[in-house]
Length: 403
Image 1 (cartoon, rainbow, N blue to C red):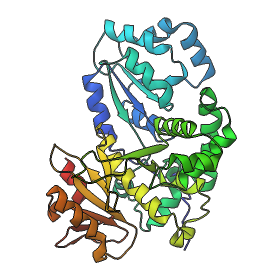
Image 2 (image 1 turned 90 degrees about the vertical axis):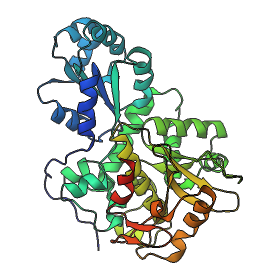
Image 3 (image 1 turned 180 degrees about the vertical axis):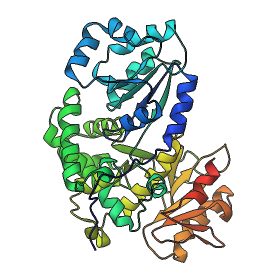
Image 4 (image 1 turned 60 degrees about the vertical axis):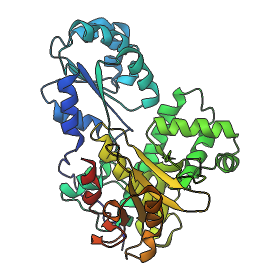
């Protein structure tokens, strides 16, 4: 069975983040949506604020006006403000925007978007702190797709296709999309960074990271595989994190008198990009692929991450592993209570040993089976004495506890 290609333009798929974006705009003079390229930022802001004038700063003439006369550029929008898309293209604009917002602090005047987080966030923190609400937007979640009538009936299809909106709106193959996406990221974004001198080696580095999605980072091994040094590997991982390509899942701080693994686990924010970089050529190839388990973890960690970010919350996601090999794939902190432990298994049939590490951790932490979960590749939710097995298709039994 091969993945079906989207043959015609899909209807608009609503984003869960829209409600929070409107809330931020009602409380701050400006709001900004940041995230990876093509995660749906422009569609989101134009749908949420259809009455506002839309300005794309990728346009050369518009960008030249903003660079040469920023005061006049901002003044033209008057009291109503505007949507300024890809605002990182004119970094000096932030300083002038600060003055505009200070002179008239009515909420929601300017809505900004930006893809290059590593270039934007320092400027925002320097000039617009306290004046701007920040929302981080990743590609679609399974929850959003299911609500729009685009269910993921076979998770291998989702791992291969990934979740970027264009893949659900146009008849484009994942290999074509991610090939162009990777080149755009390398050639447009990374060329602006002094830390990356060799784009070819950096592309190899990304591929080596994809092979490790779902694994604890070994900086020495990663660096050696790419022919770079340890410090460069750390620096390049930081670049991938700040540009929303990677998400490091850090160890939980409480050790329960156990010696713990110190390094983070590495996850791509989109499984489709990781699958492409790892050389996976179709969904069927994943059936027996050694990366299937790591990519399935990548999908589920991404779901928890999106749930939190869509509500402008910090992720508060961790993993736990001691030196003897006991591990819980994800601990979700909420409301200061005992974290929610979640194991992630790609198998489609629930097995008793899926729960063994949950039981071990519960004994250390004093947690209960009622709030312990296994997310697996099957279709049904099954409650047992050791915890609840939850289908990847419906994570509501877990996320409902986070409300």
